[in-house]
Image (cartoon, rainbow, N blue to C red; front, top):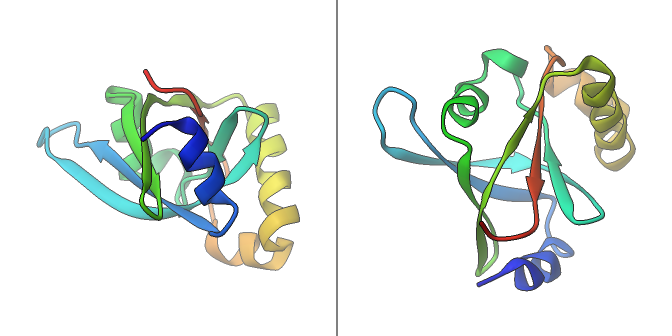
Amino acid sequence: MGAEQLTNALRSTDEVELTVTGRRSGLQSTRPVWFVEEGESLYLVPVTGSDSDWYRNIVNTPAIRVSAGDSELSTTAIPIADQARVDEVVDRFREKYGADRVTAYYPKLDAAVEVPLTSS
């Protein structure tokens, strides 16, 4: 399935399933993550920032799969380390999920990921 089906599926969920390739094992692993959508991209924030394994895996191997419901998309993620851009993404997370929840669940806010909603 493609970007359009995934975009439609995003309307009925607050999280996506993110599949990354392990930088050491080479194995794929999947986890639920919160997201915000803007334009033709999703933005993700790793819970423990740049220390998160899935973020470090994306830095090493940016090919990922994102799914919601029965829709999925394989694409290339773009790690974001620029603090001003990270802050913009975090602000969107606060708007969507609530500032108190972001503060409670995200202790380190030094990284984010852009996920283009186009297949690669």
